[in-house]
Length: 116
Image 1 (cartoon, rainbow, N blue to C red):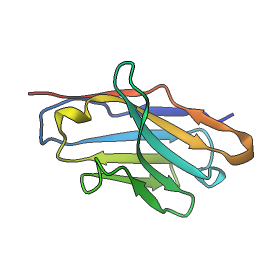
Image 2: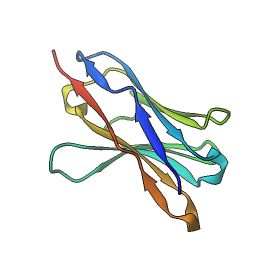
Image 3: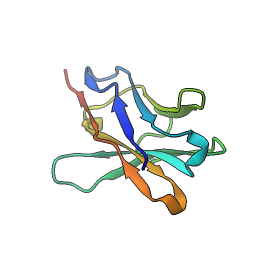
Image 4: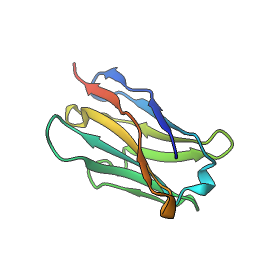
């Protein structure tokens, strides 16, 4: 069982920045990848960014160049630094972990609201 705890959400003005954190209950090297998704109301959950055990990062087109995913292996934390935030970035942000044969896991989410 892997527990994921997100934090760092909040209310920010357009053009502002936030850094989300996802703390895992296991060593990050035990996970194939850790990913961020976001969801607005009843819409489908949308991929935002991922980072694998080797540190390779991928991004959705809508956030590439504005968001950066990184990992602190010593603290078992994956960060999502979000710059130049737009109102359309408003969503609940979820952390997801792929533990290969041990399953996959979701955090409880953290709300990001971009509004003037």
